[in-house]
Length: 169
Image (cartoon, rainbow, N blue to C red; front, side, top):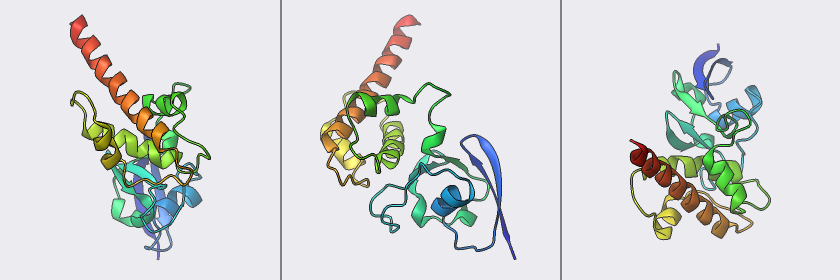
């Protein structure tokens, strides 16, 4: 018996015929779709390395069964950039050294993208609010200051873009 699952992954429709209903989204992405940017860290939902967006909300893909997401839209780290143009959060992580070994970076970036969407429209972003919003993602290297700086810079850049569009109108 197989379990058919249809997902939209990074904008592309994908169909999986899973032989086991216990396949996690993480394993489906990595082993069946070849999307290895999403990392398997603790495999218990504690580190955030496997964070992806499902219908725009961040989840730990290691805790989510793929069959439960039939019809959902999934965005992984591979789906953020538009061709050669990095997503603003990716660019901010590079500009602010928001990584060291890089293992947690995809999950950190995906969590930051969702967090910034959650606080969209808020003026200045308090560092404590960023720390709380990113608390589900661990970095073994301790690159937290760079991650914090990157998230705040991406928020400020997005906020400035909104102000510039309003000024032009």
